[in-house]
Length: 270
Length: 318
Image (cartoon, rainbow over all chains, first blue to last red; front, top):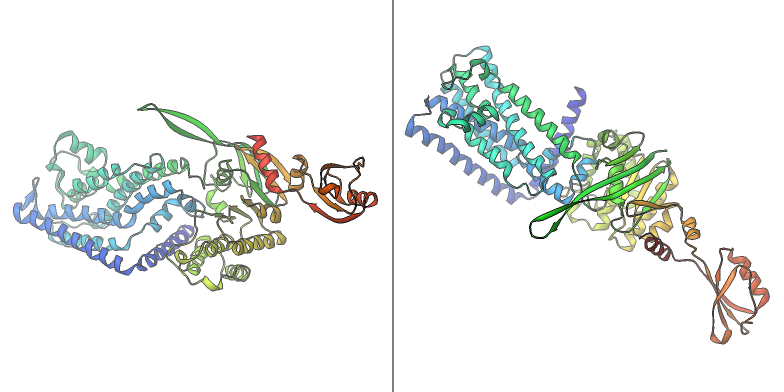
């Protein structure tokens, strides 16, 4: 445990160095921060517009839809803040710069996260977090100890789930440097899928994404568990509480995939 | 021994276009059965032409690449399996792969590396002071790395690789592209490191001056195989590099004169200048015999050129 804490401390040092490096280019940083905050404001506006029009979506009332949308936003923007730049692995593999990460006494994945960390994304995450807290108050929740725990844990499990996806998507670069935007179909596509009640989608596609790939466990099932509603599609109640387990599984698979990927790393001529 | 490799091999699959759509897959062995042992404290020159497999070997020794076959241990551990353990015990300078933070002052990179390698403050400070003195880091330690010249950066890289007190230092072409002064600084520094004897150094280079000044032992590889393992002198002996004596005489060369251990290869200037090629015998004996036989005015001994030896070696094994 002390060992783990020490490693986290080292990674924190690297992240701070990364931020200091980015602050060297002040104008560029400020411009990007402003740009990012304007997009976020538009995102939030979209959600409110959706409400004022329908008042509900896919058979769920406004507050519950807001809860799903904001939980999904926290999960996605949180993982966006922590790992979304890991797809720069492509560059590191193509140029052979990944060598320098393998020469240091730290996990190569943790280092990659540290050196691709982008502070400007913190704004989006903060906005989403505020929205989530508001949604928790607005929604009609019969608070129990279990539900309080779930409300706290659910954003983290969502972040872990999306982060696993980002990492798995980036890992493809070890085999296929031109992997391009394939992984984005699952990450950005997944964000859109998890923002709304899955009852809006149809058939086999919905089952594949919600249960097969686990996207239902980011926001839809946790919200059902929080507000105590049964699933109109008939998924049993105990499964609504399983999002931590699903996130754990996803993280394990992504880590395994990463390890296999590193073994396939070919480097480049010097 | 601190490094041991047995039958080390690395295969790469390359695809080649055949016709419009078809692609053929080939397996190419970049390193093809290298045996290598290095004792603690040695300074080893690992040389070979471009594409011979030098860097690939180094990457397998440092845990970056997973070997296709063979056994390898460095500091008693298997590099890929114990990558992070090994990383604390070795230092690496790969010319093109910087260990420094591009946008931060050089000194901040060193501070970060102290955290990453968890080096006690006093050890770190002592090593940094020594490197600062020997490499003259004072002038640019507060400059962002991106603004450093190549020579300055390479001095920074060397320091970065040594701050955690590694047992083995791997250097991949540390003098490539440097100006004369920076080359000299790097070479002197490595010479000093070798003198102290507590760090094992494995060096790849194309710079023949590096080899002559630093490497007592040379391992030459070509097409992924070791073609020579020994001293520079042994390399000369094996490839019959011979020293040449050029003598200016006061009287013409007597054509019937023969000297033991030397062959007359040219007589010029109406017999007043003679060129003798030695058969490995010490030059002194031949010169003494020469002085007894003819009136000498001037004399020069030319050492064999290492460029020629290496070039011959590469050609003969191709």
